[in-house]
Image 1 (cartoon, each protein chain N blue to C red):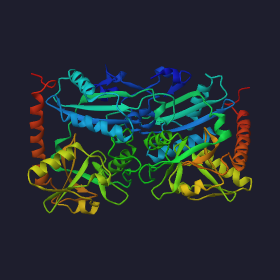
Image 2: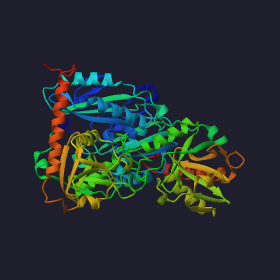
Image 3: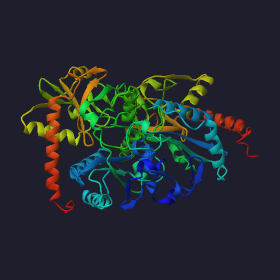
Image 4: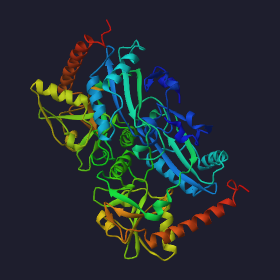
Length: 305
Length: 305
């Protein structure tokens, strides 16, 4: 590996902090052999991890979804993150928490595992280019379908991301930013790493969890914000055709916040510029981040004063 | 990891041979982060890898299925395997070949990769207990469905095996040996790591590739053997109900050869003992192995004389 690309990273493996070039996992780890792991990504704002407890609850939920009882408590993980953050001067960090079912005799049966392994990757956050927010991004509809809930539930953030890797490959081949993934019914689920929203008759619409998608933390936060501000908002299934005909379209995730989409499958959305309602929602989301971070900074352990 | 369990192993990483405790992969490898890898498993008989070229062709096919052009040729991999085998006295070895899309900047886009990584794990083969062949094994029908071809094609042997891990967990919870995985149409596809066959009116039946399953090398070999011996044989969809009512049932894979199944979902198959036709087919398969290995031993590089 070209270590240059991750030279700023720090990795915590089962509680031990290590530089990126020494951050390794056994080839016998089930996370490597089968993608038998769960993960979360959170970011810091002003050195404080945003909604960390919510992410750790979701990590636990993902683990339950694949029959893992996590051997690390949220408090232990939070403590390790707190220790890791001390190594950085940066306000903005990317933090990836992965727990694998561990190593053991080779074989699919999880009973062969010797115990779970925890990996936390800290690295400087590469911000999304401002251009994406100013001009909007383009999506395509992937030819590959989202894993159905009955085979590998997309609401589990696991080490099995080939479905999404294949979808984003199709987007990149067509010069698009990301891909919309459909379910077997032909309805929109999500993009490869973000939830998707449309604005139709001034109503914000995002697909329901039943469509087979990850219950995004940013998605849940925005549903709350929209309701609190008396915006019309609903969770409803929609097709790619409705996306193309929407007033506004945007995608949401922890790393992107609220990112406007101005082209879908080569068709221009609205007037081809990021919509005012999308921007308004993003402004409210940013206010919410400021409030939460402000409150968090008053607490131990994130109090840096 | 409890290294005791793999202490007999040898691992070749990008051409370098290393003991198991030093056989590690970067946490930034996409094989670890996303299960973005392909693999094959082959075994040796009398120190000779069985049908290695066929396995390497399938590895290439799996790679193409996820848009990877392998950076190692079959000849290079074969050469590394030949070198690895020299470290062992054993007649019977387990060989797992994995190629990941490599490491790089964290992100789903395969374009972020710095280049593929090759891992070959050699270890002593733990033979299947003779009891399984004498008494037959039990299967259950998994509640979880097989990944559909349109999301993650089961005909790609990749690092995304959570679907199968979850299915075998259900089998183990019920004290069964393995699980039958169905597709969305309710038809049988395969077990978690083997193809499945039934004998009905003296005809051998196995589901067609279109059902969404791995095109097993043992499966293909047995189809040939059955035809050559003028057995009635066909590829046809069937339900779990037909499995329970079959004369005989068995599963096939490189590591199991032909393994009789005598119980499915708690129901006894036939008279509850391995069927004569299953045993007959296994005998023919063993003869075929002997023939192939005999021919291979006359060739360089497997000629140990």
